[in-house]
Amino acid sequence: MVKTIETTVGNAHNPAVIERAGRLLAAGELVAIPTETVYGLAADAGNPSAVRRIFEVKGRPQDNPLIVHIADLAMWTALVEGELPKEALLLAEAFWPGPLTIILKKSARVPQETSAGLDSVGVRFPSHPAAQAVIRAAGCPLAAPSANLSGSPSPTSARHCLDDLDGRIPLIVDGGECGVGIESTVVSLVGEPVILRPGAVTAEMMSRVLERPVSVSAAATRPLEQGAQVASPGMKYRHYSPKAKVTLVEGPAEAFFSLLDRSEAGTFGLVFEGEEHLTDRPCVVYGKSGDPASQARGVFAALRQLDEQGAARVLARCPSARDGAGLGVYNRLLRAAAFEVVCLTADRGRA
Ligand code: TXA
Ligand code: MG
Image (cartoon, rainbow, N blue to C red; front, side, top):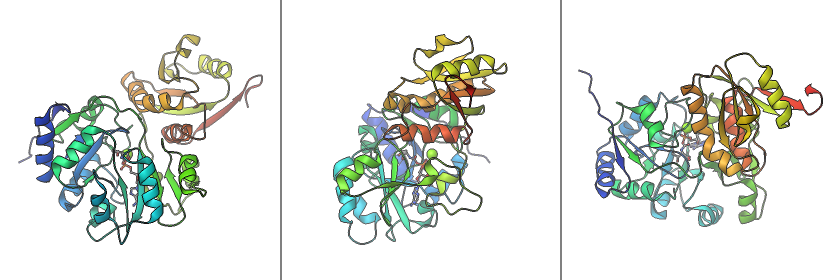
């Protein structure tokens, strides 16, 4: 017989909800939890069958490793091989709790299911008080990918989790809207420091702390070539995709709106605040122009909204900054657009 699961949404401010989340997780069940970046679909990181359920529920490819979430440094020590390297400790001191995942060689305590067969593990100490409270209530580190169905935009509210996971998990802890809005920066310290996924903690910020360069993987801004080796398996999947076909448009606002006005019926604009009045076409707003933090906060909700409104095609304004914090937003939109980018210039229209 098929087990029917009733999904409840409980407020993170209610201690009984946190306690229930802890009990469910300790018993091998899955719970969606808020973090400062996006909502996570959590399970006991040390329980192989619970972790396998994450892959099942999300429809996640088996070779994509999970990030392990901790609420104190002793948990970290147990997850990695040998002593914690000095550079890892420096980054943790500077950016934890917060939106940074640090990859190191894993200890034998991390099951193959969690690391998807790799010999490394990505660990993050989230700053969201409800995430910390649930980890403490569960009494173990929690493996948690984003709490969306694989391939759809990451969830930044409890509503988004319910839309994707209703009837598949017993509990969603509602901690309000996520403050950062895109997933954590993933940095590997297995070799030279390299950012595998850009986020709110930037290469510049980490370079300053480590007093040496931190590079960004080319896969952050370029499609992978056929058969290429990837350091981070998550990079190779079509990601963050709404159902609509998205094209990212670089260039000035004027040229963008002229292209949008001429585009086929059913095309939506994905634009900055205040710009929706520059066209008769339907638009969804994803942040303020020139403000990467607000763009990060809004981008995934905007992609979901485009689907809800039935957009068939979307022309998206390019994030204003493509370095620093803007790189994370650019990377997510590039992937939503499956790397389809059009460059416009002010006077010549399509370049
Ligand atoms: O902000 C976040 O990181 C959110 C919240 C819930 O914490 N989590 C999240 O998890 O985004 P997920 O599974 O959606 O993305 C994890 C990314 C994937 O691209 C995966 O390939 C990469 O991190 N990753 C995890 N462990 C890795 C490892 N050992 N080596 C290389 N890449 C790893
Ligand atoms: Mg994800």
